View 1 (cartoon, protein in one colour):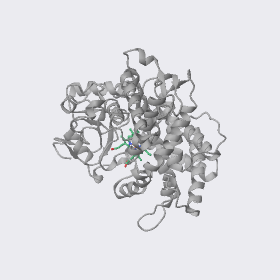
View 2 (cartoon, rainbow, N blue to C red):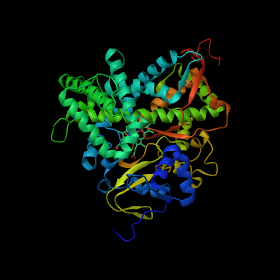
View 3 (tube, protein in one colour):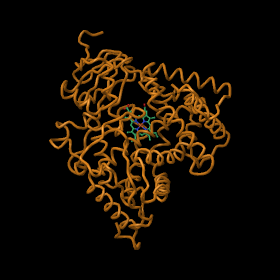
View 4 (cartoon, helix red, strand yellow):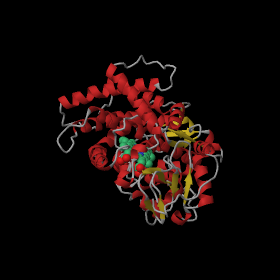
Length: 490
Ligand code: HEM
């Protein structure tokens, strides 16, 4: 190791205490460390290699430019078994090939066709709402995005099979990502835990033992059983997709089922299953957590929600209809989501597991270190965002120059940036445009200055206790359309 390679300073507290503070209030703890130690600091958690957090844009730039042979993402601290052979955990050429395979079904041109379906799904959920109904925003948005995932991942819009998939996917997500499973996984060590669960899943699959749909005594056995059931459904669909080519289908499962390695071989079935499951997990809680913070800002800034409502109505007047593609291009609506993701990113940081010494800005970091670019801290820096950095002000996105990818990165960056960012932004823009046009919510948070603490759900940061809301008004689907008698109602 180079003599100069060293870890930046950090708190001297016991590892368990650091882990506790991260679990209970990660935003506040990171800010406290940044205030004390500056642009880079080291945290130490039980069972993990040291974590070096950086937030200065030049350091973030070096971080996103790390070469594939400097890192090993199979060591990522995610204690969920989606199979080790999927984009998030693989390295080098295999990783680059994987992104080539899964990005096409998620890119903009196809998203254009899907905006219409996303809007139909959002409409179904809003039509089913009644005044007085109570929801927790992350769970409500999680349900909507799960319906969207059935369509974009599996090509299923409705019907018995869609419902079966939907129920199973939700049950598996809940069983694999709850606090008990995360606690156990972190105690055993995330990658060791993933391997154990994966072996148990393969054993069940070989034996054709898909369980009886009941929770057993061991907290992990239900999650393994549900994964075996879900994978079995997917396996049958992969075979069917391969036997029946269909030029009309462009969902992820179909496209990846037909993808080949450079030598012409089809990807193994287990690999296709892992990619589909990783995208399901990757897209679910991230969107739910992002929506929770977004709604919290809007509840506390009713004038912003009202302006979003007026902006959507203006678009309807111009277009003569709710055009979901046009809606997703409205600068003010996009500015509101960006501002929420700036101040309260659901992924506080994004991680690279260093296996070789690396330069991060002026620092030389030793191997066997987890380096994290701390989006939460970079997004709040006054030297980047100005003296009003901590204010929620969507207008900042409409004036002046836009931030660089090293100043704003809620979806990570570089070679490993989120593959689902376009889809995620598009669905959240449509959901919140329709909420603003059609639904009024009340919430205890609308009547207090108080902010909730933070909790970790599936590795995402969410408001502690969720964001409870009560529906006070639901306007009909034609509200605001030219010619509608409800044009001016509110
Ligand atoms: C608001 C929603 C979302 C947020 C905040 C989010 C955030 C992130 C972040 C921070 C990363 C790590 C990037 C890095 O290491 O530089 C990531 C990776 C990833 N995301 Fe997302 N994500 C979201 C939605 C989605 C969706 C909808 C999908 C799938 C359809 C998805 C699939 C993935 C995958 C496969 C990766 C791994 C990429 C790789 O390692 O090459 N994400 N996401």
